[in-house]
Amino acid sequence: MAWRGAMTNFRSLVLAVDLATRKRDDAGRVLSLAQQRRDRAQNQMEQLQSYSRDTSSRWSVPAQTLATPVIVGHYYQFMGRLDETMVLQQAVIADLQRQCELAKGQLLEAEVRVAGLTRVFDQRRAVLVKAQAWREQKQTDEFAARQHRRITGGRDNQEVR
Image 1 (tube, rainbow, N blue to C red):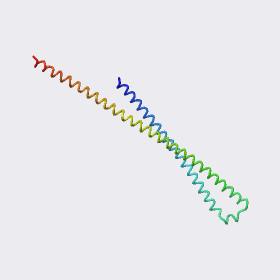
Image 2: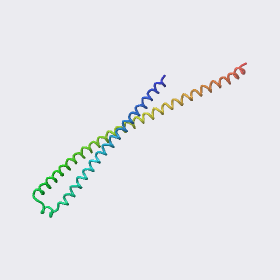
Image 3: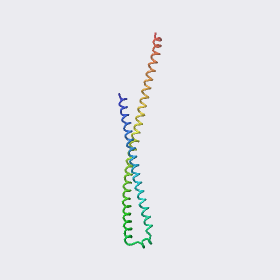
Image 4: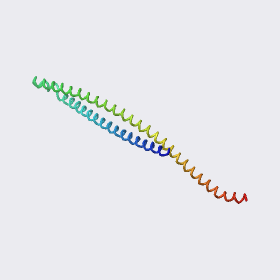
């Protein structure tokens, strides 16, 4: 009867390890997606910065002197908006980085949970294997003892007469 209870607990532990493993895998996927989003945002930021540098380098002093005041005003307005866009993009990157850090923490917690459950699972399995080996040895010993009694029992009866 105790053996059945141990097997039920063992099966429950197997299910717990399986569930924890799936949660860990899900946490890994969440982290991967968060990192991809952050990397895309960083790439967009680099494109904005590159565009800003290119535009500034094209707007040289001779180009400014030939441009009308309206065009110069539009240029500075455009560059101001581009700078604002880069500030906003930097905030997006910072937020995505925080999401990555949070996802890393959740993945670490899930990995620790799987490791702990796996360790308990291995310990319980070792106990069950040892108990099974003990039962088998006991059965073998009992069988050998019965055989020995049966064989020597006949001799003992003959010697007593």
